[in-house]
Amino acid sequence: MKNAVRDGSMGVRRVLHVDMDAFFAAVEEKRDPSLKGKPIVIGGTGDPTRRGVVATASYEARTYGIHSAMPLKTAFKCCPHAVFLPVNYETYVKESKAFKELLLQITPVMEDVGIDEVFLDISDISAASESIAEKIKERIRTERSLSCSIGIAPNKLLAKIASDMQKPDGLTIIAPENIEAVLAPMPVRKIWGIGPKTEMRLKEMGIETVRSLTARSLENLIDSFGISYGHYLYQASRGIDDSSLITSWEPKSISRESTFQKDIGNWQIIARMLADLTKEVVEEMRDRDFRTRTVTVKIRFADFETLTRGLTLPEPVNGETEIRKAAFACLKRIDLAKKVRLVGVRVGNLGKIES
Ligand code: TTP
Ligand code: MG
Image (cartoon, rainbow, N blue to C red):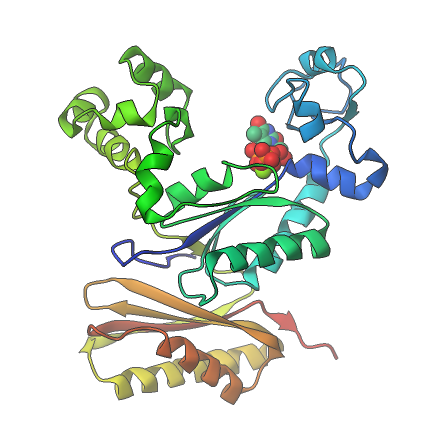
């Protein structure tokens, strides 16, 4: 089940994007440390005389002009002494799962966007952005022996742009007041959702940088690209992106939610509902011999604004009191300024009790 986690109409958010550096190549270096520092090209069957394209190249190999999607034969011409390796997809998926597990311990509010990248919503973590990012980098370095680049910004669009700005091992924070200055000189292609075709069309219109894109009126963009995409280009070029993080509720999670017959403004009633739902979740969890490490509470207001707050516990638990306490700690972090329509609770990161 997909769940929209935060409503974009809220105040300034802090979204963090993690993108692993030269991911497939880095995993291969981890498996065989003798490869470190060598130009490595991953693609196809690993035989550069055969058909196939480059999936990724290590940063050393990139200095020879090798890049993703280049034919392997061309890569071989660029750097015949590079180490050519086949794609070991299963190994990369395992590593992908492992670093995402680690990130889920930072916050359960995570959107999985690809094999080597995720978004985290860190708005509710009290630590400074830099220290959250440094902690993540340090843990990925020591626990996974990998490096990553991190971008932090008020939304997903900008966070993804930021993580790409100082690769590898980068950390880039785009503060709200810097958005325009950062975006203006960038080629339009840097904007998520602008692919090679749009890039070509924009070029024909004399638009190559974000600055020249923002010089166009909304009407002009709608004329050229239609209402929906025209709007998107207008907003994205200004760094506007209200989209929520989409967190997937892990398969091994148990949740309950309930909609009130009428919208409720009374904390006692909301709390009672949360306690009842938590009891049901705990009962099911115990029946199935699970313990949990993350508790998440969801509140949907009368206007459908939906917020979730999550908590990661130091160790797996299955006691109703502990889980209810965690659920209430999550509830406390939600400002119940409006009437509530729905309450939900979920326990995730489930593990079997060892017998
Ligand atoms: P990317 O994050 O685009 O690339 P990367 O991690 O190798 O390098 P960077 O440091 O620039 O982030 O993609 C992640 C993985 O996805 C990459 O290691 C291999 C795979 N991939 C392909 O198989 N084909 C492709 O065309 C691209 C772009 C990536
Ligand atoms: Mg990457």
